[in-house]
Length: 106
Image (cartoon, rainbow, N blue to C red; front, side, top):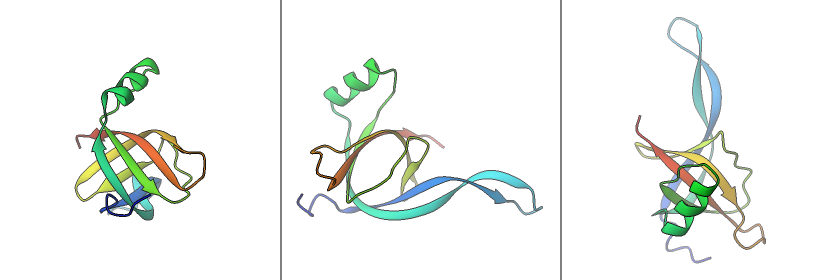
């Protein structure tokens, strides 16, 4: 994998319970790790496969390295938030992950 396209730094976040100003437990997110990756709009192939599985997909993110990503996590790039829909190892060699995501409009 060439490093040039991996120009974005993503935060991998997982759900967590955090305390608000009054000490009440509220659902929130915590950053688990950061990874460099490539971001592109989901192509026709990814959208068709996602629709057949009953999912909506807007982007494909390629992340380097071995990751244990799950569908309940999300990727954050600056002010943009991408909810993880599906994760796969494209070549089966555990070198990278292709993540199909849906950009949320928070």
